[in-house]
Length: 450
Ligand code: MV4
Image 1 (cartoon, protein in one colour):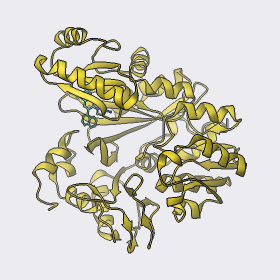
Image 2 (cartoon, protein in one colour):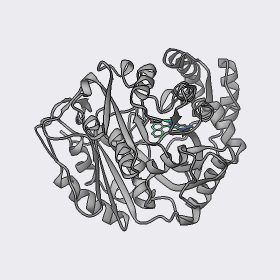
Image 3 (cartoon, protein in one colour):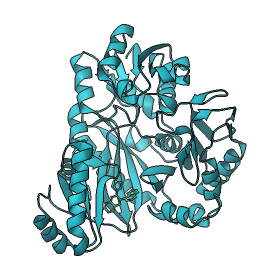
């Protein structure tokens, strides 16, 4: 096992990883920008190293500075958290070249899933159901028209190098295709330096359901059910739940096995998430994320596991502690992402927190790096807390969430807490009657946030 791990991240996820290290008796090294000198992850870690100025590009994304911090402190492994360098294959390669260990999958697996055409091709060959579409990249408008006409409109043009909603354009009819194709291409070129695009049938009213998988890198893998993340705004998840209100045990076991078999057969190591669109009782693979996700705590609550601990175990070459038959879903968990933003505009609201009180009690978990007197810097993601509840069933989880949101106090900055409180008044949310467009439609029509 490692003696010391460096956490190449900040905020609540850095705390999350430091907590796992402490419970495992492993030393922790925080890295931070000058803007984060007073951050909680710096206080909580055993050691810390300043790695640059406020700009993320010059600090949390600076590979040389992070490698130097490892060498200075003697850390043997790096946990990337989510975002920043977590899905950067070049970073993984450099870590290995320095004789260090990346806590996560191989550079090859990150590259495979980062290229959305290769990811889809791989998954399709492994028996994972995919959205119908072009067999690979589509080089010309003429080709795009031919494929789309055969498949039928609407279609969606996606960037091969994209993901998470960037570089996508919908063509409702043949009249829209040329513009969608050209825009998707030029936006991809500008954003990713790669203008390759592919085409899929556009699913109009799906849910976003993702399967948590975990592999030992040696051909063994398990699944830990699904999360329903359909409540999103501009591709930012707002509330996630496990299990999905529309998936029954037989469906879960079936898609779960397809996913765990797929990642087992490629010798995938560590935590992964296979994203699907779910429409008319059918799953359609869209992307695989090769990192620990923000919403992993709902899975941890329901399956009673510590995914970060397990990531560290597998990265150290030790056997995975899960067996599929021991992974039994228990109750229901919901996570609210609380951002320092003013609703309904979602305008960032950095600044000093004058008063903070975290909710507690049975079945309540608050993952947050904020504290009384903390100043939220304006340079980074606006996530300041994740409120996660766990209860025996879905109704009890919503009741507990309602109770916990009532206890939460964050003064001095605006937060998205009023949005969460308003969502808990919505019959569609409480009954699970929502799809990927529900939240944006509701935000357009509601007056409850004014
Ligand atoms: C789609 C789609 C409909 N049909 N693909 C958006 C993020 C990226 N991960 C994939 N996305 C979508 N792909 C097909 N073939 C609709 C979306 C989409 C979406 C997906 C999940 C959650 C929210 C979304 C919001 C808008 C569009």
